[in-house]
Image (tube, rainbow over all chains, first blue to last red; front, side):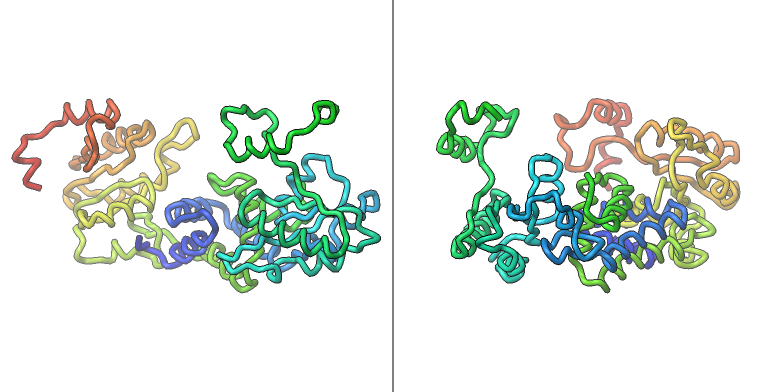
Length: 205
Length: 205
């Protein structure tokens, strides 16, 4: 694809660096931006630039924040002794949306992935170990994805945290709420049988 | 979705204004940008801003250009008497990639769409009529999409151009090259029967 404008070409090249955006889509996005008012495009490009320049990471939990400590770490009503470890900020949002969790978070910024050359030291694991105290931390919940990388990360963190004498838990795996048995994959269904719970205990929630 | 950072929120809001990008995807794109080096993000946002600020439209054919006249209109080897009318610059690229066309283009910048409030005056139709001369223009090819809007635009332009005594043609409609009859939709198949051509004439190409 050769374009009649080098400026358009550069914009398409840049848009195509975004994950999941091919050159064809990048072209569509560039043409859409080109049709907008100049001040709208200034607002668009400034919002992206300012985010990168000014956003900070919470010094406690590594969550994204506009201040030194994020809103969750500043909230005195949240249980400091309960830490939920997640891969990234999207997981924080997902868990916050459940309104089920009143503790604090720790954002790893990724998962261990030897294939991609990402080891424990590339993640915010040191900050987690510094935060966790045998007396002060009651429980660490590993809320990681159920992928190979998520499991590897969980395995590593559990070992490190157990050394410190902290209780480590992980999210339940089983049927989706609203899910049919016949459409549940066999690994999940097998897990839900192995992890079955007393009826009374499950239903009361 | 409420985020812990207003800066991130603004960037996500802006990315979500792009066509086909929902808030979930916008979030993924924002996090990807956030992970990059600062100078990379500067290059990204500058490319978009410069495109909008500096790109011009060719004063002859309304194609995107970095100069007053686009490279195609400046090329003396291209047939000035043959004008191919297209909806937008992506169509110019698609036709250029076929290497079958040696005339000039005219970019309408859209199609007539009463539903979206787009009439002939919102497109570059006046520039087309100003360009077309009964003596100088041999043929105008309407290379528009086969949608209701494309057909409406073709109908309108054909009438206007015929008034000027110019020969107007349109792209052939029929089977895709490499297409199976059984998987071709019935409108296209019907059209390909109605528009059948003498065997000798079709095969020689």
